[in-house]
Image 1 (cartoon, rainbow, N blue to C red):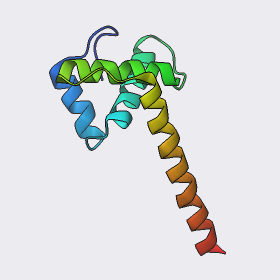
Image 2: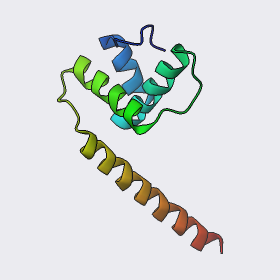
Image 3: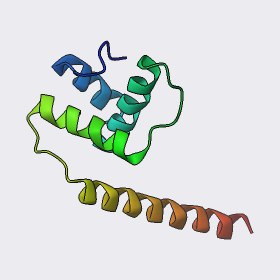
Length: 94
């Protein structure tokens, strides 16, 4: 877990990426959850909070700043893929 709301160390970023199996969005989501907990809020982070966490991860690892539109497009693409997986599972179970 991070120790500051405003910064992420290189070691912390690497740990989040390792835990997320190098999935930036999953790492950013967990970072956003931890930032909320550190701030005393147990709420699930919204897209803006996850995007900000992704920005923090990329800043510390030397990556380019993510666009919010690109981030949202990636989330929609992932949601669509999950729906297809669940549809396939329902067909198999039937």
